[in-house]
Length: 398
Ligand SMILES: *Cc1c(COP(=O)(O)O)cnc(C)c1O
Image 1 (cartoon, rainbow, N blue to C red):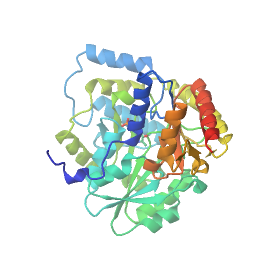
Image 2 (image 1 turned 180 degrees about the horizontal axis):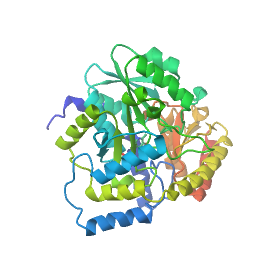
Image 3 (image 1 turned 90 degrees about the vertical axis):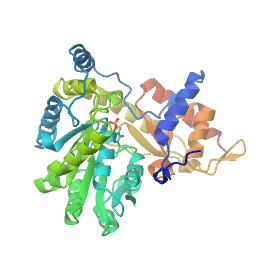
């Protein structure tokens, strides 16, 4: 038996991917499962983007590229930042990675080391604390309760800062809560970060997915000073339904981007050449796909929030963005089914999957056990049927 490295202590499979896999396996066995687990849009990648990839293959764009991305894609990313965020970057300030997740991983490897604390508002995306620990750092979790709109206030942020604090991660709109920060909230966070010379890690992967006219802004766009202390992370996965293509990108100072590029050059090398050409088309081509997708998501959000709130023991606030709701199901904890007590979000998730054929994701790995995450990246018919099944399952508990 070969012993694993000590860095593997406490590092397991991503729970969100595990539950999706379990639901898929049950489906493959012929079980009728309604899936609210998906962390990706249920739309097909737009045709123009697929065609750009096919063209790239036919034209022989099938070899290594520059590690940090082809100049055409870097320029498309630069145009995107200018157009959408009013942010001006040069090519040396941009890196393209194998998905947004890979950019975040490279960034934490580049800036976080032993003794460094990373402030992470909770609920958080499951990978942030793990990636901070993999870099040798210490995640410092700050509660961002539902009563505060699932957002970290600047006072709580300031109180969590120590001499060891190196960075803060802001994810707006958020996975798992869908909460999005207003410009004023971001200003207050940025002020505290600048005062303490912290790196702001801004994960803006859900930037394009917001509702009720909520305008998502990039924290980096607040001022030139903030921009210099910020690395913006984004990608094509969510906005263009391209999760399988594995293209994400980051923008920051030359020094940090160079360090991230060096890590990438010694590990993965460039992201897939074909996917890069597809991403050029995604960013430079027609953008109307996004509006149509978001309009559909908004209808489903309204339906799922309404349906869940009609269930006794379930409470669900109305998020401004992403395609998740984070529903409080703690009103059902302590109840029993066939003699077994529902103790927390993992027990509740297993109960729903086994007895109702509904896949949700437990809140525990996101930092709050009172909740489960439901993704409404699924059809309206599935939303209706899934909510109906959850209501019946909740009513069966005694
Ligand atoms: C989906 C997601 C990403 C990036 O995903 P990739 O598929 O790696 O591009 C980054 N952050 C959050 C919070 C996400 O949900």
